[in-house]
Length: 638
View 1 (cartoon, rainbow, N blue to C red):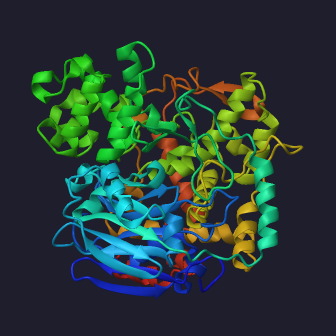
View 2 (view 1 turned 120 degrees about the vertical axis):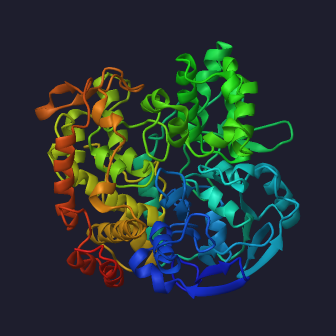
View 3 (view 1 turned 180 degrees about the vertical axis):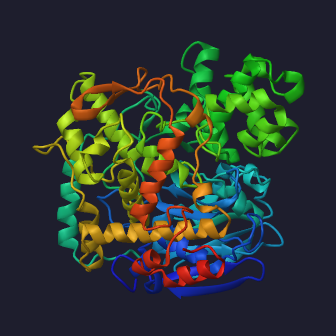
């Protein structure tokens, strides 16, 4: 470990010719921290603008952050990035994973791994204590993610952490996932990128634990964070008494309500959040009660490598299409009369993963599939799908206007950003409904808006005022968080049941980083790093053809179809002007107001308002002069 908080090197591998190189982390850490920042920078440097998703030139980057390896902060998260086919448009994309793999990569001596090229046969990488080997994986190809990981662990020891793919990624399903230890799945279509390179797995292990510059200060901060967030993790319907138990991610140091359970062989699987919800409602309707088919579905999704957020929306779309007679069993080869059953979900998963019959159409994503089925099938997309990357509805921007710009400017569902205003709003809704123990009152909510989102207007959900500024602040903070990398469940600490005013502290992230690295950084400077990383991603996307302003769009139904209800807020009640209660029922994201929001947002970002393109002055202020020169040479700078 050459610097506090970091491993010494970044590893670059070209599978086409076996070339391996190491670069000093110090060349990247100062401006980009780690995680999303270093991953985006490596991608910018290594990938030609015109490279396609499945071209050897596309690069898959895995990166941890400076917080990895220091328990007490839920800082063991890591990211995987690359160009993806998951959306309507090919675009740079990303995923965020937990548990051991990212920390073990750092223990092995590397903060990041960049993989280019394409092997001539299935391979896996073995990285241990500063050394790397490319090994044959022919015997693993075709295996599920779970089976491949078990085989590799039996060969390389229980201490090794394994990242692998299943058959869906091998067959280039557009929304295929990667799977790591502890059921940590990475979405965004990046599994198929790994599959296109014939890279079945990456095994990491090592003993080089990072050091903090100020361990005592870091310990004090860990106690502070623990006290602030104690008891704030939600307890929802993924907890199954008698079956599941708490299982925090490796190196978390805080813990949450993340669950796991064992099958008869002793292999453990996850039960958590959206993944458990992906097939729950169809299964409960089919069986008339809770069924373990709900968990079976999650095992199938993870084992074969399918994004649960895409599958949830797809299944709901299939249900609606079936009800209206748009699709039939004869047409699809699916047992549609048994939607919700074990037979249906196993058939659907295998058809998609192996691209058999109608499954080949679905493997391209629900939106593209709907266009092949017909006009009514396209219209029914709005029943379940929120993004152009085919992901399920949640945190609807017709209710929470902050989220409109977040969705429009990202290649996929930016869940870490969407959570910020949405989880605070859900806390307020619990207080408004008189839920026992709820504390996020009108006053607390407005103070959070002033402290974190730029002003009290961000607490008024009945107006578009203040939402552009709130979106910018949320994005900048999230990109810094995703570079550290800190867990979305706890960060930022917006509120706390254990402080006098119940308002959180926006400086905690910068304090943690300062204690780890020994270099003092203020919260404003950390946000500026987040802004730098966001602008770098924007430059990557624009260089790939995102289109600036024309690319910043929502699915049409969000502008055209009135909001009827949400599961967590059926009457669409919100906090309005001056603390008054309002309702967003029947609301849309007004097109005219949305364009005005974009105007304001571009001005706040220092971009050209007319085109949504970045400016030379702003990129210079962000120390991205080389990015500015590249965009200027392509006519993509103002």
